Image 1 (cartoon, helix red, strand yellow):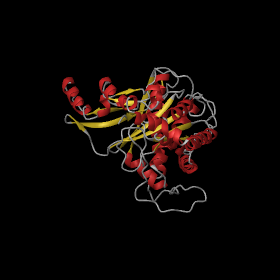
Image 2 (spheres, rainbow, N blue to C red):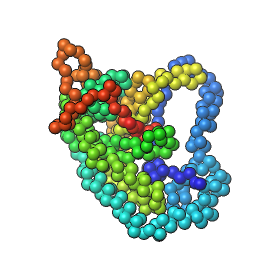
Image 3 (cartoon, one colour):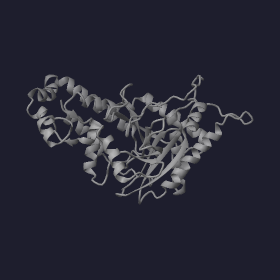
Image 4 (spheres, rainbow, N blue to C red):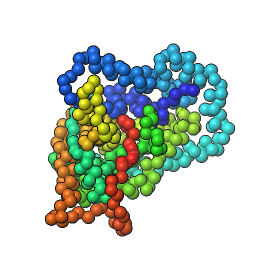
Length: 400
């Protein structure tokens, strides 16, 4: 059976083809303790590990006539003898792909129409963000900076504020963009910064899957709110509202539909949406959970893992979050020409987290900050540990 690329991965591949200077692969910088090993020894160790990852031995190949999503194959010979043969020489496989639509045309039309209605609803919610210098043409070069914080401290803030890890992280990022806009002499309007936040579509037990399985949730970052505590409340309430609205399920539904229906119409819809004029999303935020235990290579301990998120489609900034051990790292990516302030942005994120930590410090001699709850909501019991969201590898999100 052919190993088909997921619909979301197929869209990423299509976008890379459309913008040759852009790579949509997430990455990370791993810092080891010294001394550095000999080059040959390092390459041998890495080669041994890469052999354990089948995807690194494969290439993506288009399916003739776009009858299906691209397939992964080990090499052209195996592809010709295996994956493509399933489509070219196996009439059953082709009949299944085309026959589903022909055998039940009303069902196919209904499902495609439902997906279209979902897209229209999502598009209607995506009113253009206020114009700012945070979006526009980008170059082929990037700037990069890192903000660091204690994972324990961030979890304590979330627990004491009765919010989540993601709420705290997005609140700090919102403060960073607020400072950036003010430094540029721009008004931080409530609709100035909308971030595309990936939400995992993986079921429990599927966290180790190789393909991306995420839906997309567009969230306005409250850059108009100056007070860190109030900003955290606004972030929390906004995310709760968005999740309840079902917007996060639209892209997930499309991906599920693409797994059961003929690929071309679904692919065309996804690619068309990806190529629409970019006036809605201003930045992207990802959250990649790393291992809580220390890692080693050639006897050298991994000191930190610094995440990197790519930017494209007129998005001039992106922020990726990665946890490792007791550290949270915020990797800030900026266009080299349009965003020279990535370092101040990273420092402001750190300052915002420190401000929240001080606001929620458990000092009985100081006035306590009331845990955050949506207006009108009844008090609920605070868990011993803050809830954890979902985030899969690279581009996915997992429950924190």
